[in-house]
Amino acid sequence: QKEVEQDPGPLSVPEGAIVSLNCTYSNSAFQYFMWYRQYSRKGPELLMYTYSSGNKEDGRFTAQVDKSSKYISLFIRDSQPSDSATYLCAMLRGYSSASKIIFGSGTRLSIRP
Amino acid sequence: GAGVSQSPRYKVAKRGQDVALRCDPISGHVSLFWYQQALGQGPEFLTYFQNEAQLDKSGLPSDRFFAERPEGSVSTLKIQRTQQEDSAVYLCASSLGRDGYTFGSGTRLTVV
Image 1 (cartoon, rainbow over the protein chains, first blue to last red):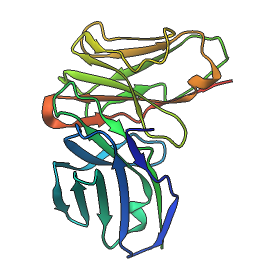
Image 2 (tube, rainbow over the protein chains, first blue to last red):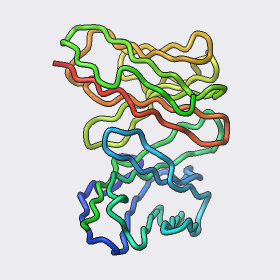
Image 3 (spheres, rainbow over the protein chains, first blue to last red):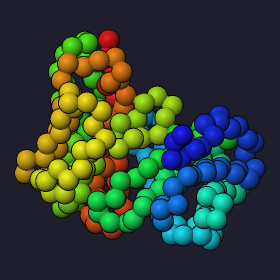
């Protein structure tokens, strides 16, 4: 069993819809939770990170962490065609310069104009 | 430079050939990571450098994989006697401590 599980999609929604992306994890040692966006033929870019349980909002994006359920979510409001990409959840055991990121397999998202 | 630069962007190798992939991190970034991303999968950790010291190579899949960063800046990932299962995108990321990781665009390796 993988440490981080993510539905690969693909997920296709109309422009303006609210998108919900989710991951589950098995290792309770994870403390930092991140979402990366990866466009085709590009490297991942950090969208948001949160520490421990709770919500964090940044513009149209909201990240939620529920450590008791080992479940994290990313919500995208007012989705745009430019949001079409692969979204990777990622986790760290500790946020030091030596911490290696554990990624989910990614969810492919397509926003239809 | 402004970002992490990787070269070549694409590499086609015949099975059994040796390849070398280069990563030029952001100037001054102490930490450097290599990841392997298979088609349709998330990146998987290969190895980590702090300056010139390779502190973690637990993700290297076999002894055919070798990485170095001799002067603490540019890093090279070398794969000897390439196999078809080595076909993947190889991503490099650099970090200045707690500032987060910046990834390069990767090298897409195809072994035929």
